[in-house]
Structure formats: C-alpha cells, structure tokens
Amino acid sequence: MTDAKKPETPAKDASLMPPVDVIEDAGGITLYADLPGVPKDRLHIQVEADTLTLEGEIVLTVPEGMDATHAEVSLPRYRRVFTLSKELDADQVAAEFNQGVLKLRIPKAAHLQPRRVEIQVA
Amino acid sequence: MLYRTLFPRDLFAELDRLQREMQQSYDLSPNIRGVTRGFPAMNVGGTPGSVEIYAFLPGVDPAGLDVQIEKGVLTVTGERKAGAVPDKATVHIDERFAGPFRRVVSLPDDVDPHAVQAKYRDGVLHISLARKAATQPRRITIE
Image 1 (tube, each protein chain N blue to C red):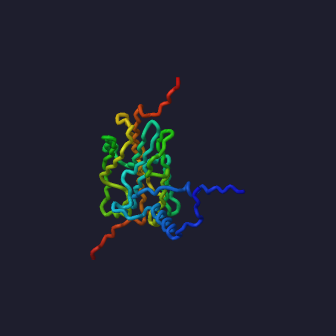
Image 2 (cartoon, rainbow over the protein chains, first blue to last red; image 1 turned 90 degrees about the vertical axis):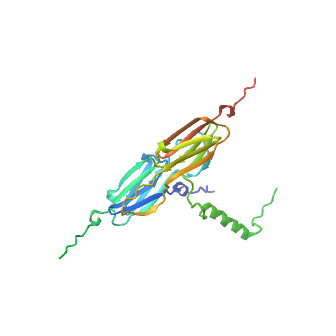
Image 3 (cartoon, helix red, strand yellow; image 1 turned 120 degrees about the horizontal axis):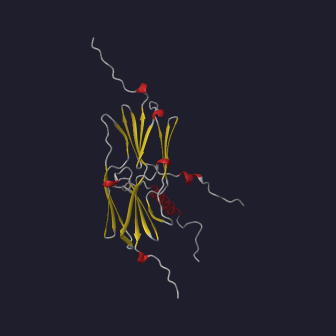
C-alpha cells in the first residue's frame, strides 16, 4: 500500500497578488506595490531576461496560541510577475521599500530615451 | 443510522450546487462596491488573554492614523494620500487604494478598553487588546 500523500508544491506556492500602480513617463517606468507585513529582508525582486518577479513573505508578530477568527490576508506570501518590454533597461532597476510599499524605477535604455529633434528652417 | 446514497437523487441539482459553490469560492460576482475588499484588509485573532487585530495599511503615516474604541466597537480611520503622477506620464495600472478610509470591528464583551497596545511595523498596524482578568478561565483548587 502506498501512502497517498498530496504533493506539497501547489499549496506551498499559493500566494496573494499584491496591488500595484504602474506609471510610465518619458524616462522609464515607476512601479509601486503594496506588500504590507513584509520585512525588508523577506522581499525578493528578481529580473531575469524580460521577467520581473516580486515575492515577499509576510511576517507578523503573533502571540503564542492565537486562533485566527477572521482573515482577509489569508496567505503568508505575495507574488506577482511582470513581463518587461524590450526598451526597458533591466540592469538599472532601482528599488525602495518603505513601510510595506515598494517603489521600483525601471529606466528606458539610454539610446531609446526620447530625443528632441531640432527643426532647422531653411 | 442515516443511509446516504452513492448517487444524489437529483444529479443536475447537485451539479448546479457544485457549480454555484465554485463560483462563490472564486468570488468574481459583480458587487456594487467593486471587487476590491475594504481597505485596510484586516485579520483578527484571539488568545485566552487577548484579542489581536492586524490592519494591513502599507505606506500610511502612523501619525495620521486614528484608532478609537467606543462602546465595544473599534474604529480605524485615516487617509492614504494618492501618489503624485508627474506631467506627461501614463498610468497603466492603478490598483492601489488611495483616499480616506474607515473600518469598524465590534469587539468581544470581555475586552478591557484601557489595556490596548497599537504598533505600526512594515505597513501593518497591530492592535492588541487584553481581555479582562475576571473573565479569564481560572482553575479552582479543591480544598
């Protein structure tokens, strides 16, 4: 008889989708993400090829023996994946994380920045 | 002992119920207040000695937060300022909550409104309310 254990991965990978704001200006893209409950050292930002992955683990100070009676934040993890477009410079991503709000700045590649073309009047 | 048939009497009604339950669990039903839940999201828990409330309030200045307890009801109010959008910028995604908010939690009867602690860390407001000593379980020694 084999012990039919459920594979652990699907439940383990379950995560919340953090809300984000994405604002684009001429110089690049600014992304804000709400990740309340995530300490700085539990936040992982990864850029691989053209995929940006945000992951954070929620750490709450919970007293011993607490029973959760009502949970709206029901999973201890946030995760969201974005595809970056080609003109963004993934090597120049700057991140700030303050009180649960992540601010990411992804500039556009220098040669793709808008340039003003002077019009010469003949 | 109740006998339960292997096949429900009305298969189609059962399927219907199953489908409805699945729909509810995905919770994409249109709501007049939108699909977003209240802000801040809250988790509530309890231990024999305390009631713990967690309000998920990322990026809110704790000085602008107001927590009040009145007649057994706890109210969290405040405002989250919208980020400034620079000129000539395009907003592609706008999901984060901005504006004034207010959430109300009714507390159990045995909470002591004078023994409250509130801490703000990593964007979470943690309110810990002690229960009154008189209502805590006591072991009575038999003489």
